[in-house]
Image (tube, rainbow, N blue to C red; front, top):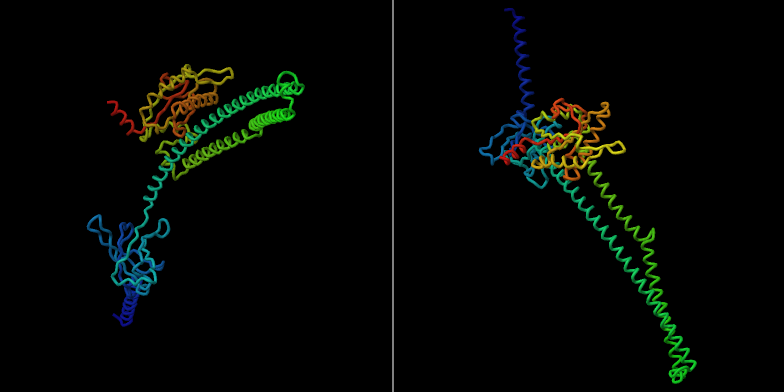
Length: 462
């Protein structure tokens, strides 16, 4: 081998050794192998994403890495995580510092953040232990939010019931107030009539007194002859004057009572103010209920909460197509129970051309609902409307009208929750109808029951 080739081989070996040494130095420097450091440990109940080599930061600065992870011997104990930290940051790590498991952004890598302690605490010793704070799990937040919304839904329902009771009590109060006003008016009229009779009697007495006094003054009769003294005459005159003053006072009192009653009952009086305040209270209550219904509808349409409301049975039928609605019957979440009711005995055409629910129709709806009362009240109920006469648009409008009238009756009579009772106008196509031709004219009640509730009812029947 020539000397030149030997020189080249030697140079290549030297360069390779130098590059290897530089690489070893860079790796060791990155892993803090050549820097002064100290070791600490922290305990955690959950170490998701933490492993040997996980970054450690102090006050946001890269300070070291995780050395080891000790598995607890029992569920009551916690994980012990050993860490290596740069010595130049030792002054920031105190005995009251805490170690928290964090992530870079929402889906970034996991790291351990050691928060700087207070000036009054001592520096942590090499090999000391810190208090650990577990990472917040997104699944736990979602579960807690779901429980919170369930509680809100139950509180909304209870609040609506309390509003209904308040409105009923307000109606009773208005009726009692009206009866009280009638009684007061009758009493005032009776007092006025009695006062008028008293005034007539008083006038008669005064007139008789004047006649007697006139006879006495003229000396007529035995009394006139005996009582010719002027002092006695003056005394009698004073009595007559006092009687007239009394009559005027009675008349003024009567006129004041009549004026007070007129002011109370006239337009613009206190009675109108009372009725205006009551109307404002009722209007405020109605606005509050309307806002509550709008907020609930907004929650039901929120994509974060739609799964929760679907579990509770809130279906947005307005945004659901007919194929999507029919696909509900194929889900394992609910079992569909259906009762068919024909239009010939359910509805009657009025002179105005619209259809009204007949008495026989109400009885048939009550009989059908009797079959559903054994199932949970939170089971969604959909009233399907069917019509076979006219064009497709006419069939749709008539089926919507029939379903709406049946729904309003069930909500009013059976106290069905309006958010769990909807309508679906279908037209003439009725798969599986009793007529056998997949067509129907009338309505059908479809109750969506959870399988576990259906099994429970079946076991009770056995």
